[in-house]
Picture 1 (tube, rainbow, N blue to C red):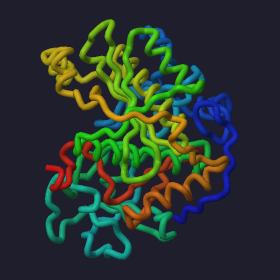
Picture 2 (cartoon, helix red, strand yellow):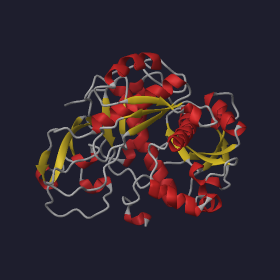
Picture 3 (cartoon, one colour):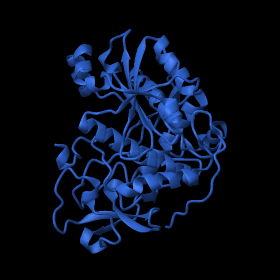
Length: 391
């Protein structure tokens, strides 16, 4: 089905850009929680001494291989609650539910209609004539229908015993929104963010230290960390696009808990929003760990054995010295409309990809999309999917 980008004004600008205030979004989505299997929404804020709002939505009957606890964050409690609920809607919508898939080889679908699986950076070789599942989407760069390997669309991906998965399915480029354009923009930002982090990690170069001297929401959250003895190392990562990606590495100098050496990140045309997302994602990771619902016992054991000092040495790239830039010197290229922001993003990614694929996964009144940018890197979240030149 064709996807048309319509003019949509932003009406909410407090810490994020949305087409309606979070209170209105909450009123719309809260009645959907039972339908999507959310059993409980929990305020995790008090678990951490920071007091930065963090909420969790639990889906006990999520598909096998899917997260059962979705964590949300925000500058205000209502934003964090809505974030968790929207995350649950995204994951529900991405689960395979008997959707139509074509079963064919890449050659049968045809290079003019399909994304080549190898452009998704595979951890294994693709067999000649290998049968795969394909899902239709819309290429908003070329305004035409496109077929993607279903493995890149659904999460968890169910091969139905008919084919070997190409890679572990994930949630990269999965986003919801009050309107379709809002969902598409945030999905684009996520794919660009993961690409920038993948390149920076592979090259062991995080770019510039980012400072925030001006009075803004990100500065207020940064002060909250510092007041509680948590050192934050902010980075402006130079990705392949000119869209700001900000990463924040946290060092809890009070507890010296190795599990609290966490990283958050954000990408946005507004550098202040990118920084705020990175900082609140750190709070989200801390809240998630303290709540325990998403903790991996094997990973925790490795962290405990390594210890605080050794883990800092292993991850010293995040705490290293580098040239700095203040956020006031990073251009804010965001507009007051989602469609205009999407146009700006498309101009940035066009030199690096042939297609911008959007799959509409909406299963409730809330728009949910999966965005795939062939050729964009994913090794930061899936180390098995590295280009050969990355080693």
